[in-house]
Image (cartoon, rainbow, N blue to C red):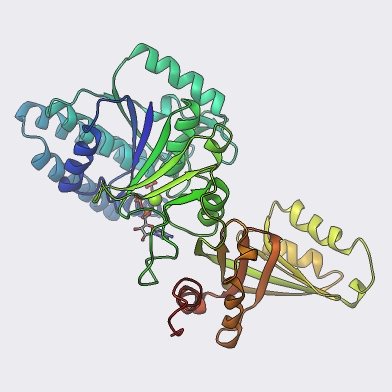
Length: 443
Ligand code: ADP
Ligand code: ASP
Ligand code: MG
């Protein structure tokens, strides 16, 4: 069995949904297909949650009306059979009514997760019926029946596996369609796998089913060696190890949800990144095999806060770092980068919800400076610190004020901390220096 996931753009228009159908019908292999919402829909639903909280009745009605029209328009063109088409449109309207009713119940548990996951519910319903209408037999699975992960960070794969297998045993098919993004928490409440979480849904399902492979279909031909949104002339990487892909995803490569890789590492299931608009392109294969050592790719993670903790008492004293780390631990705040000197320590966090408490506690014995709006630039590749080109990255110091550098924490990652306003220049400079070495750097 293979798991195929199609992202927002891939299912975002009538034309693209036809392409997805073609990809699914090239062979008769057994598949579970995980779909996102149509592109833009989850953003709209996130806004809708805000209108609900503000009790803005006009905005709620407008927003639900737009969602209904958008999905009806797709059904109108996609499904030729009149009776199937009318039935699907009616069901879309019923779902919109359900959302409207929910929007009047502010006290409902997990209202936000319930609302934002409707995008996947609507799209998979339409897509499954479209496939049926063009004689592609399939079964629509409700992910809420089996994605009982308990914890988003550490999903209970066994539980998902047992539930899903029970369902599949009852309803045999070569093709199943289900929703990404949605899950249930340890209380059985609807939750989400966080923005971009359908990638993670696919690998959780892949691990639960011990799938042959997981394919993530998107709008680009694999994971590129730099962020194509900011840098021109990036290239897809044919092979990545799980570790390399996990680092790049965690440190901002938007093509993958940060946790995508973790569920499949132990069972050694390959993850293929493929382009819906160019299925013949090789894409990227993520597996446990190392094809090439050295520098592979650069990514950037925004929303980083740098904290400098300075105290003369640190000089020659032991136990100081433990005391500082304990404060972060007590507030469940994880640290990404660290550098130290004799009397100061600088570190970064991305979750600032407890920053005031942390600051107050540490200010009892040290001077604390907090600077937000930073980005971590991550240079990744197995043994990257031994790559003969890597030294060139330090030339960046001539051009950009680098706040921190982390080198040697592992062999596979070098990280720089810069102000977010300097992120794009840094990515471009590093691209020139590290990948296009024959050219002079232009920033
Ligand atoms: P989907 O909706 O299919 O999940 P995403 O928008 O989440 O797609 O991810 C694909 C996008 O990720 C690409 O269009 C590209 O702009 C962006 N991206 C950022 N960094 C990278 C990278 N290193 N390689 C490939 N794509 C990247
Ligand atoms: N639809 C969700 C989002 O936009 C999940 C996903 O696309 O992976 O975040
Ligand atoms: Mg995505």
